[in-house]
Image (cartoon, rainbow, N blue to C red; front, side, top):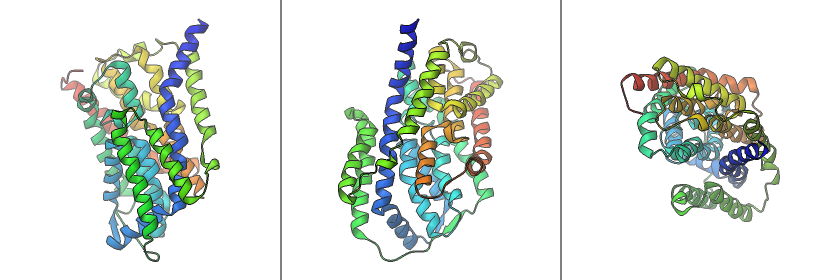
Length: 358
């Protein structure tokens, strides 16, 4: 019994390790690029070329970044950029910086690489890229679209940018080289067995030399330890077959409920542990598994603890002196993400009703 529990804890922590390692490397990466002044320079360039920037373009950029790279990249690279844009526009930053936060969840179910939850499910259940795309790409697209339609009713659809000073070519060059290295590393790294956290760590080291600063205070050790502790606790107290009944449901209406339940679980204990407790009872031909995965992805943005990406976002803003409260966070996410989640769940249920094979 003791050995089985220890094995379950070890397996959960092993699955979490890449995400936690990226958390520890990703926050300093954003902080170092910000110290360099890179995001301010990019915002200035954008202001010179497109003073009235359409917010839809920022929404689409965040969606594509999440889909093609991963949700953590969206948070690390786009949150600081959107904050710089908001400051150039002399406007409340929360509506703009909420865009990468929202899209990190709403668009994260298209490809396996888009979210670590997808990669874990693919590995555990021997799924293919085609399986993920066939079942979750359309619900994710619907969530992204509905999210935008709601967002645009609440916030301006263009942002006017003021430009400060002249461009610093050195900062732009160094920052662009680092960002280019990171993006190439994230795309090609998996085929070379190089994890994203390794790429981010190398970028951190290079930037530390350039800015002559070691960002010890930006390393979120406490946050990573907290998520790991929750995952270990769940492995100990939740039986492997605890969700067997839920993973066996098949009707379209029931799938909507499973998606909602998964979203609630993600926001209660974080989406990665919420997925890990469901996988022992899941199977590749289970529609409930797809509903659960959709819920822990799209619905994880509702509360700060729902995903590591949310915690990355929260940590960066606090470091920048913005100090979002739980109330302001919920006001930025729930009105947009809740209808998007509902639309995604209904889309998956329609796919099931239409007879798409699992």
